Image (cartoon, rainbow, N blue to C red; front, side):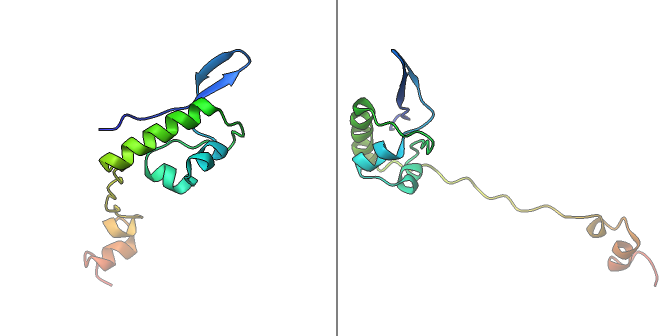
Length: 103
């Protein structure tokens, strides 16, 4: 299984874990934001910097992920519940609909 990846962002002399890769870093690797999100790579559209360390780690990660066929599983869609009071028969029109009240 491929591990998840996060970028390193520098502020002054300190480095910290970033929220996502910038568009410039994705472009250097050859990905667009949609493909990156499909592979499970976090994207931060507000960042404009591009660090070579992030590009190298991203290239390695993408090669490994493509080799193993890594994809982020799609969330299962749940069925929608009932809406409104009329479907539960709590209003006069709902009671008519369910034949609980004579018209």
